[in-house]
Image 1 (cartoon, rainbow, N blue to C red):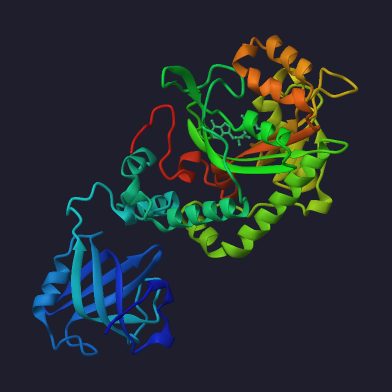
Image 2 (image 1 turned 45 degrees about the vertical axis):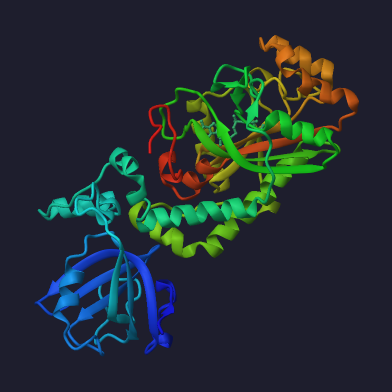
Length: 447
Ligand code: 4AD
């Protein structure tokens, strides 16, 4: 019997064992007529399989099976059954170089079309490698991002992409949570950027955030609520950092004295998250770095966290300048700006008690770009209605939300994080599309 095995677990210690492994035919090479080398890939691990040639009991030079292997189209899913052996010299270009598999049986489970639109190797190439090859007079194919996104299921098989989504899962796992409704009766952030739909005859929209319902959960007596869920924005923002559907990590909590209690949770959560990623995803970060070079994130520990207060409205340019100042002065890529002008924040934001032109709000930046916005909320229904009206919001459409504060509601605050932004900026990917399995931007609804 051949025992199922994972490529990642194949090492010297299992030499001699009879295993069965399923994976993708990453590369195939015939050597003469009797032997073929097949590189089998599982996730980001690869192992060399020797087919035919009698090596290590490979069936005494089975030319038929070698020919069959050599004819496999790349990316076909195959099963190999064989014996793990130690190669005479380390296999080149595979992750499991200490061992190879002497194949006795080979099955093609799913045949890939021989004319793949993009190859995994081409998609995995760094711009640097392409530039170097070009300088040396060689031709290397570089597949542009749009084409890679068109054929995303192949693109996702590159080591960098396998690594990116491992890291994304780690972040989600650290943020254990439940979810609020995604079909709602009105806009949750104010403004017009909502996807409208028909809800059994009633007008409805896809939630722009779990904002209103996470606050209502606090009114329901929960001290702290967390959420990881989809967020929909109908904005026509064609940038490197906007998607029309992204994953929101949201948190809302009752507070005692000050909205800085919320900021402290942000500090502790993110410092712990970054430490966790550095510790548990070192291999993934290295794999990404090979294709998308970046510097490790600098962050202070929670004790040393700095709070910088903004003095007025900041446009993108000013934010960037301030960011550079903070980065230089405090040697950190992770910082928070507080006390934004009320006019630039949503209607539910609590004004400062000493000067209502400013608000108890904050944004968090990583490498100079926003990943989080948060604030204390208004828990007084009359003030809430007034602030909504002042922004031209139809208070009738959010009546149930405003009413939730008429039955006794504690002071509270919270924040919303864009998961893909965190992945993009922590990993220095430069474009949010790289951090989304199947990105939805203003132009892209496929695949
Ligand atoms: O700043 P936003 O719109 O804030 C809210 O939704 C509030 N309800 C949060 C709160 O609790 N006060 O969005 C929160 C975060 C942003 O900081 C950003 O990281 C991300 O969501 N984000 C986007 N990510 C990708 N594409 C977009 N179009 C995004 N818009 C916001």
